[in-house]
Image (cartoon, rainbow, N blue to C red; front, side, top):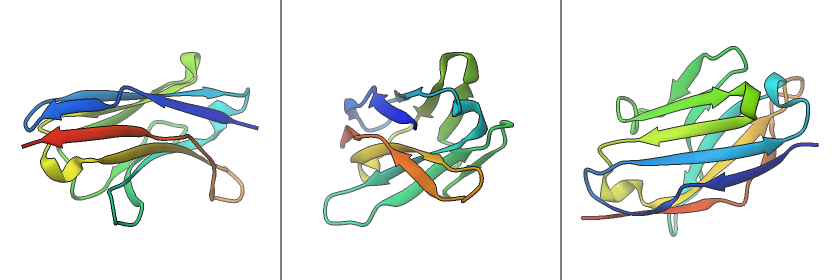
Length: 118
């Protein structure tokens, strides 16, 4: 069982930065790939970034070069550093843990709101 708690969301002006954190419980954290997703009002949830247990990363084209995902396995925490924020980045951001065997995102956090004002 893995429980995820996001934090760090808020209101920021366009061009600004935010750092999201996702604290995970559970001894198997290091074996999970971790992802960040977001959902804007009236839109479907979309992939933002992913980091595998070994540290490899992958990003959606819309955030590539602006967002950085990282993880601190000693602290069971995943981060999403967001720079050069745009109004279209406004959404609820969720972190999720991908089951290493089933390759599905098995656990989800409750989400944290990010609002970018133009």
